[in-house]
Length: 110
Length: 121
Image (cartoon, rainbow over all chains, first blue to last red; front, side, top):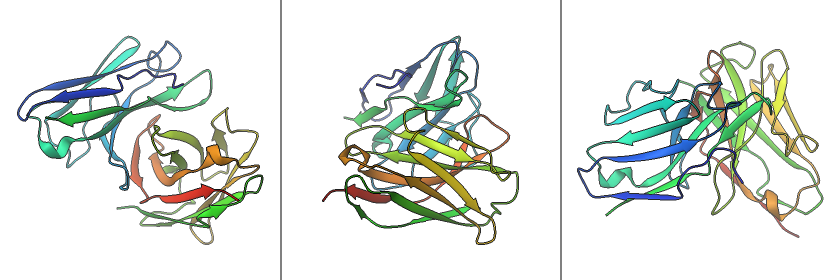
């Protein structure tokens, strides 16, 4: 059971905007910054967002991140079929002195 | 651009030790730029952070695995390694080595392609 809670699934149609949530506690999201990753099994995961809302170079501005209190969100606008993947939030946990991943959200593009 | 490549046995017997090595190019494991990190993903489950090592040799481990894990760094060969002992079927997963920017809490910039390790007799 992950300490960071994400919905197991999300879906949208091409062009739509979808949001994926990540809920934690004061020891993790409430105290540290959040990263988001996209993963297709069989490939290497990819960093989409770091420090809550920063995009690495090469990541389209269709991807955006936000954080408030002990929760964070990833928004994907202009949904494309190639966005179908698993999405994970991640942060540091001060009480565990280690990193955490959320349980993951499987995004389906209908 | 940092490139990472995992290597090691794809099959390990229950109760034995899983050993993987990650060969790094494009960066030095002796620099302080990155935390050298291991992550795994069992089939049908999510990503699990295993632990990390800094150039100084200091480590952080997932508390749920801490009693069975050792991560070490070989700066001469520009590699770092994972040892997980007393494995069970629950340790079957794709294992990834990765580099996390040391200037941030969890910013994992570069990942290996992953290697499947199956625990079975």
